[in-house]
Amino acid sequence: PCMMQNTHHIVVSVRVRPLRRATAHACVDVSERGITVTSDREKTFPVANVVTGSDQAVAYDAIAQPLMAQLRAGYSCTLLAYGQTGSGKTHTVFGPAGCLTETSIQQAAGKVPPAWGLLPRIAIEVLGADMGTLHASAVEVYQDKAFDLLADRAPLTVGSKSAGLNVGGGGVLIIGDKSAQSHAGAHPPGCRCGKCWKVRNEAQAARMAKRDEIQAARGRGVASSARPSLAQSVPSHDQFATVGETLQLLQTPADVARLALMVEGTRTAVGHALNERSSRSHCLVHLHITQSGDGKLTKRQLLFVDLAGSERILKTGVEGAARAQATAINGSLTALGKVIRALGAACSHVPYRDSTLTMLLRASLGGKASTSVVINIAPDEEHAEETTCSLEFGQRMAAVRNTATVVAGEDASREMEAVRAQLVNARATLAKMELDGMGESFGQGSAPNEVRSFQENVQRFSTEEARARIAKAELAELKASGNASPEALAAVSARVQNAISEAENYKMIILRQKSIKGFYIPPKPGYLAKSAEVRELESKLAQLEVSTTRLTDGY
Image (cartoon, rainbow, N blue to C red; front, top):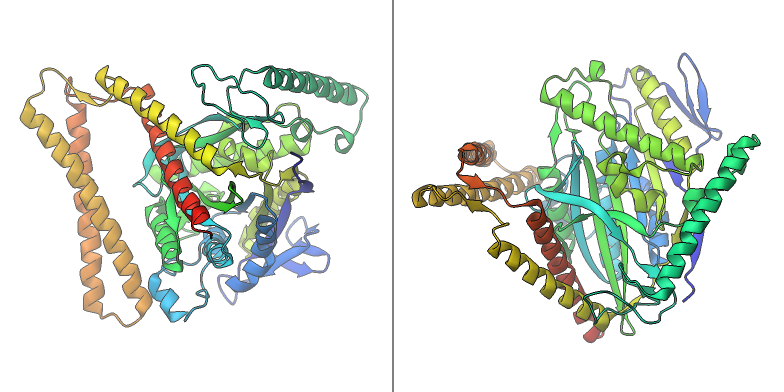
């Protein structure tokens, strides 16, 4: 079937944080021409959408409402927040520390709490618009590794996934899976039918032709803006994704608050000279919307990306582990910059694989999503150089073109059958791997009481982490209420610290036990990958079951 497409440049907005001190001098001037940075080298950036001040409702109307319109029109969307450390990215996406509580919802008397950021606001609007069932997942990219923020930072694998090919239906040929079928004209990944073979060959020929055309244009000295864009002209059928992350169902504003509070409490952060709550990782939160109707399911995503802040180590004054974190952050942001330059210059090769972050952003930067970026800047005079760099990054982002595509619906019953069949096969394979000794095990000479002690410590570690999480949420609610006694706050704070200390203690004990030679045998990589696949299919099936229940109930 014909799908609606919308080719557009990435939309760039700028949010200017208030001055840190009333007596400070500003290096930023906002006018009808755009934003002018006044420094040793004055420069004006023509930006149409500029938000000043700390009013979250104003920021939502200017930045998020256009995305909401795209979402309603049937597109998947992405919003990235970029800027130096301390410029207000996390404030924009989530809100100030401690604001994401159920108490704040009650105090708002049916309205959105005024301090809440773009992510919780748009989640509540999606719930209110009855656009379908809403699930969320949250992934942290820390030192180029991915972790599940909704599962106590469990490590996640990142790999290439094929999105399948839309060849207009017809017979599907998947070796070992006779039940495989096409959905809305799209054949599943791995199909070896004649139509898919022909499309792959044609795509490869088109890539080669575009490469030759670009090389010829460069040889003739054609300007880069006139060169054909290989990245957009030849769509890729591969995308990168994490496997097995937790999906959390959101049904009420309280669910949204709990989700955001969990992300805030679990994400890695540290204080330094420029920011007392500096995120030391990139945070990617997916809102998965599944809409049902006429026997079909339409699945769209809204991805919020709160990037860790770029920073100059000499300014922040960090040392030790924090210095290593800053180096990793700057490295991944450099990889992102290379991808943006390659896309803007229509290069034949885009280095998505240079970092975990760029792999996970491939669908947003060179795919079918409608993408926007908010550049957060600090107007203080001492940050003029960093502000200029951030705005220049925004300029490069604005040069990238995406072809957003309306998401097509899939047959609900066939989708359910396919996922159930895949889950049965994956569980059977995992069970065989377990029997073959590929899972977690212990050495032959390990004493039963040592094994039991290890397993008990693992359980205690999980219990203490859960206690810490619950106590943190309780402390946030007490602070938000505004009427808690100092004694009550001190008591809950002590519980938080005690649980964190106990969890860290058990963590060190577990690491020491694992280090005993011949005692602990970790699971094989293949077993971990298959376990992640089973978790992902289980989450996907649960998501589909909720959506199809709405479908059969007539919602």
